[in-house]
Image (cartoon, rainbow, N blue to C red; front, side, top):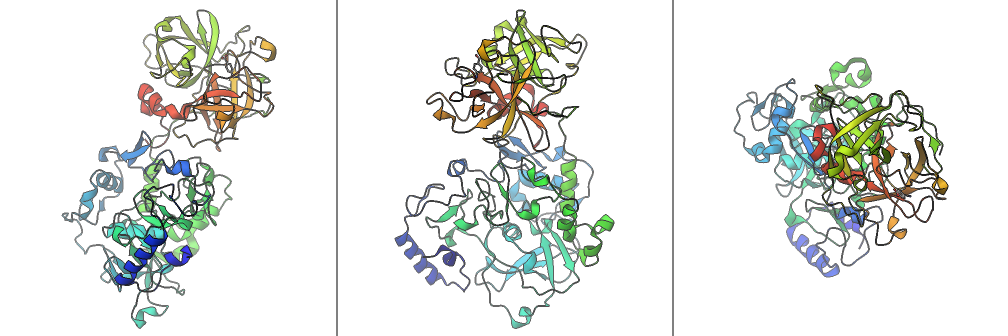
Length: 620
Ligand code: 4AZ
């Protein structure tokens, strides 16, 4: 049986037919309740990454996506912020339940905390007729042609099919009280002949997919008459679901045809079909983090991929073109052609979200003052120049440089647990802006240490959790640490920011080939290595460690580099501390790459100790 036929049912579907269908399917397929591994039938398509699916990522998983501006990221999950954390200024809104809020952010934050409030209908603010959505001409109440009545309009109106996608359909179904959104938008309904003609007036609607009510989407009316149909929808209910071993199971329990996973369209409603993709179908855009986004999200002026590449390499003008149809009419010249044809009928929540996003705090880290980079090669490395590694520090223990460290902001240095002992804190010094310890430069500054925190699960035998924090002492009378010439490296908040084969930089004062002593800071370019268990069977822990090296082993960290940085630059040239030099069998041998502590795995541990605001770049 061809699954595309089975899912694209378009004729009216009676309940007895449905029952017969279900029995047949049950006979033919062994139903697996497991989300990722069907017990029988063909394996899931190669586009989807099975190991990732087990993590049950959704639109609330901040390892994969940005949280909404009224949410923040705690331990990998977006949770609701409190309304008072919203920006104060903005336009007052009246929600469909009749409640009024000072701004849209306040509404969404309140709704996020109390989802049931949306259906309460106990407010008083919509005096001139409420916003309303209904489905007509369907066989059941959960399906039909979509009709809306906008707040300022007397008449119910239809929505044009060419503006209608699963994104809008999911919002419409949520609006109508179907928590898993839409099942499809293709079923045909018997509509009166008078509606079948092409010039039936209809509205255009555009949702972002974050709305819980169609009233939050942007409605426009176009003056041009183009052939169109009317938007239709079947909302999803569990009892009308026909899972097969070939369907994709969303985290919210809904089943979708497998060919709709990784197509850039949020068919699940919780985005779980787009978050574990090795590649994307059709024109969808593949983020390095394994997320598929619609092609229209590329170069639209808003970053969607956590790795930002959807907004890099954009031709000038592309942004305008895509947003034309949605642009506010008061935005003037840019939208000249389209604004002649379109009329905004509802408040523009889209630009309100953009505005709230732009007001979120921004962290300054990982951006060097002089940005010239030289691509040359610790073992096999090259000497560093002043200002090239402004996050690199040296740790001196009783007068000797024993390890490296990484400045991450405030008074905090990240290093390896095997480099330090909490009880010895008074023996340590942090040297910043140091290049050559035989010929100390004038910029060099020496900091004393007030505290050392070693990871509670550090295992000195296996080098698991080889991570520690050093808190530097503030000078008397000062509120902050002052580190001239030092710039913090950013702390990666997601394990998906960098991938195997990405090129990164290791730096330190460690030994050169032949165990030669090194006095000046050196650096070298290495690639991140996946599947490192093959080199270190039984000793490599994927979640906590990261291998890096070169194919010939010519560049590597070595004795003395421990605790120092492995940094990677994102597409905007922002530097992240991806690894901490930890261990390795010998140095410079291709069969034994250097092993680093995978810093992203410790984001919550770090932010717990140093304070969330010091290291959170996004999702705050
Ligand atoms: C060390 O002894 C050491 N080649 C650090 C890194 C590596 C080996 C040894 C990786 O500190």
